[in-house]
Amino acid sequence: MPSLMRTAMGFEIKMDDDFQNRISHVLELLESDSVGNATCELKKGSESDGWVVECLWHDQNAMHAHFVSSHLQDLIALLALRSRIIKFECGILLI
Image (cartoon, rainbow, N blue to C red; front, side):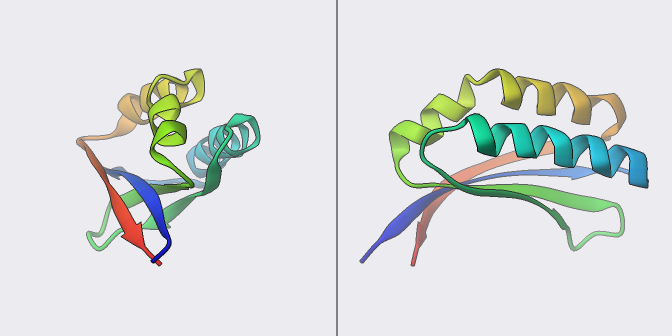
């Protein structure tokens, strides 16, 4: 059965269009510069101010390279500016 590696960062923030565009820009850079990335997207979470950045990776090596990438560090720094909390998850997604 094929699988993808999944990373997710959940965070709480009062989102506005400018900040959402800044996050989307970093995600575009992350996708274009990453080898082995299937997709990265910003999704609305279940909480009123909840959001999730979910990325799917073709293999574990690609996911691990993502953890030390400058784009991930840029994304974390951006989220830390306004987020009350940031939660990280990693796992395998069976498809």
